[in-house]
Image 1 (cartoon, rainbow, N blue to C red):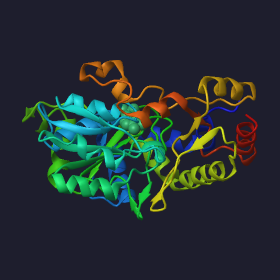
Image 2: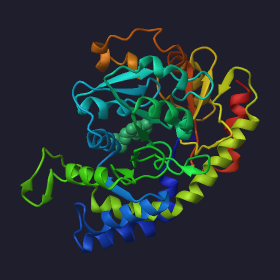
Image 3: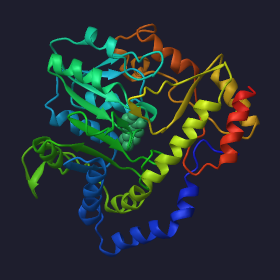
Image 4: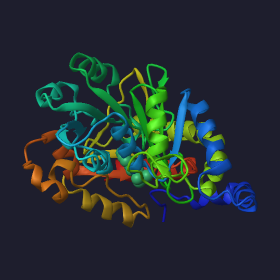
Length: 364
Ligand SMILES: *Cc1c(COP(=O)(O)O)cnc(C)c1O
């Protein structure tokens, strides 16, 4: 069975290097934060071309820290796309603010700038823009709206490490960038991990104190804190993976472009990738005519595993039933949720495997 994503291939290929990094960390018992976590922060900041990075325990905490650092809290509203992984909204909810969901466009499947302004009220403080599936959202237009209304922009880059808009890396464009290193993300830890990025020293300082139990000086707590630190072993592993990220990204782009060019079956609608962006193909999502579960079964019979991202849009999740959204509020996100399917895509896929996927899709 060709898996949707197979992490064992990378592990086997670089096993010695990963284990040596873990061993070095163990020998120094630099387990919570510490030398290896700090080293990765610097390397990732250099990679992004940003002044500050704080490694964190996961990407959900990154969103929480980012919004808290911007002063978002109870009584505030934050714009979030309806089509995203739910964690994009959790950070807002954790601060006590309310997420306000906005539909995606029919072609890019990213937040629709034309639908943002109608949702802005005098309570709106920020926009969480998500570079979903590795495809940057329309940052220039969202920025224009944010500036006009005095709103902050938090970029959710959990699926878009290294993606670019007009030649600039995501995570350096808005006020704060949020990353996840969950296994299977384009850059991943051997467990949980995340990070925030910013050029603003004040935000960086706030997030550093927040993740560290609210201390600047140990045992003196100047604010309610959290234990959101990155583990040393994850930092050590991430320093190894980061070296390979450019190579992995190139291969993801090769595979993504082949799918774009060679999938010709009219039963499938593919995501649009605007010319001013460089997507990094975290997930290759398609919209399939009819019931996507039938397509998944068909692919399984061809020995190819597919899955779906995401079958329920945020505004219709049970967790947010209190917010009072209904079916029909975000029609593009709802259509996508009803018809989405994810094809296998990971850097270690062979050309033959890519061909098998294309042939199977075209024969459906
Ligand atoms: C994975 C992901 C997150 C959350 O990251 P975790 O590390 O799993 O907490 C947030 N937003 C998006 C878009 C994601 O894909």
